Amino acid sequence: MNPLAPAWLTEPDDANDLAPLVWPDSIKRTKKGELSVGGMKASKIVEAFGTPIMVLDEQHVRERAERTRRAFEAAAARHDGSARVYYAGKAFLTTEIARWMIQAGLNVDVCSRGELETALAAGVPADRIGFHGNNKSVSELERAIDVGLGTIVVDSPIEIERISAIAERLGTSQRVLVRVRSGVHADTHDFLATAHEDQKFGFSLEEAESAVARIRELPSVEFVGLHCHIGSQIFGVSGFRESASRVLELHERLLEGGPVPLMNLGGGFGIAYTRVDTPAEIEDLADGIVDAVANECAARGIEMPALAFEPGRSIIGSAGITLYEVGTTKPVTVETDDGSADRLYVAVDGGMSDNVRPALYGAQYSARIASRASDAAPALARVVGMHCESGDIVVDNEYLPGDIVPGDLVAVASTGAYSAAMASNYNHVPRPAVIAVRDGEARVILRGETINDLLARDTGITEGLDR
Ligand SMILES: *Cc1c(COP(=O)(O)O)cnc(C)c1O
Image (cartoon, rainbow, N blue to C red; front, side):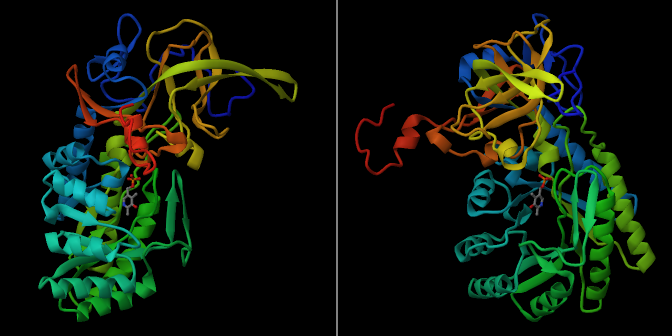
């Protein structure tokens, strides 16, 4: 045990092992010790596409999407209700992924013009798209209302008037949900409940009542229900239960003024980034949350509204891995209370530009050597990127084989959500390609940027754009 390791990270007997839940369903080590995913060996992927490369296990994504929909539908059906699932496109959206969602019977949530156009370009029917955001622009709203979007989640009084004016001008009526701050904010195992939440999204429960009253006066805006999203990377149902109970209290009061057919309880279901994360099965979460809503409705003597959920991470997160090539390694000796200990810095050819979550949130990840297996003793490693920033961390703490050398490939697990989606060109680094692998075949679903792409934006460069 290296004293520099955090308490949760135990030294593995075998630093080649693949923790369950952390990696894509199809991951394995070949007989020669190399990682393969979707039936494609790491070396084959890298030979064809280079590094860094983000690899999505297509079957894994499709299966999670389908299972999530079935889980919520079944949970609601047990109470004679219904439930719909929206894929939160902000986790990662391309036209291909939008089509996987539609084929799995899901709907798609977007939160910008770019995501909206991606979903539309994929052929997602407009009435199966939901639109979020605390500051949607007038032109975004015009586009959304013009194409006949299923629901817009309104976030402010100003937006209600905007939607009304646009819908009236276009001679249509727009269905809206009203986003509320339930005062419940959940993160991992705990939730925090306050009367008023100090954040930018939505209406307080009191404000929402007058917002709904206003919407009900407007002929071009149709109120369909309340929306509440309590956070991300949540493992338990208690936060959802508390939030649903608060939102249902308002829901019941709103029933006095007219129908409230829907309720959207957001997403945020957690995944395993490391072996100590213990996400529940989606069926258990769905049952727990829907049962809580059904019980609360029964206690209030009201009909359970049609439910909607919008997970992103739990559908696509664990399906993705990123493959990097090791460029340099460097042991660093650190003084400890009783002597010193070594940490092995393993520098790879990507970093905070392709996955900013460790730098942004201190997020933890898992990594394994991908190009071979090794029986060298595990060394406490920190996988770092190539950016000019000491916070450019890829995996903060991980045991990797001590003989890892330049040229080895490293795979980082659970990078399917909020990695490619949040990628940047920091340090003028081109964003990597994303490929989908399945049955031994790989397809580029988002091409990698070239240096040329970067230079082409610079108005001072007019020739020599062939790099
Ligand atoms: C981010 C977000 C989601 C999805 O969160 P996940 O953690 O990816 O499941 C759903 N709804 C809203 C409103 C969000 O902002």
